[in-house]
Length: 111
Image (cartoon, rainbow, N blue to C red; front, side):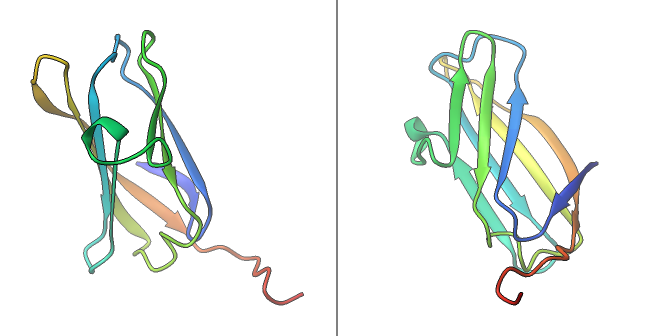
């Protein structure tokens, strides 16, 4: 379970595939049991570097970016799945887990 994540925060999830991911396509989905759903992808599969960015392909490093406000309405327990497509077209789910979202305490709108 991924924890210490706060609803409404900007998030950068740093990931490691532990192998060379040059030319790979990466997709991520975060969802809950209600209607909340976020889909992210690398630029070579319809997304952008602002969604999923391969930061060090040779060492398998990439980051998934979630913008402030995208998780505000998510259930406390939600889910994440990461899928890869290798340069030779093999598709597989490499990660699936639950996320425990905590409620943010500070509201910057009011002093």
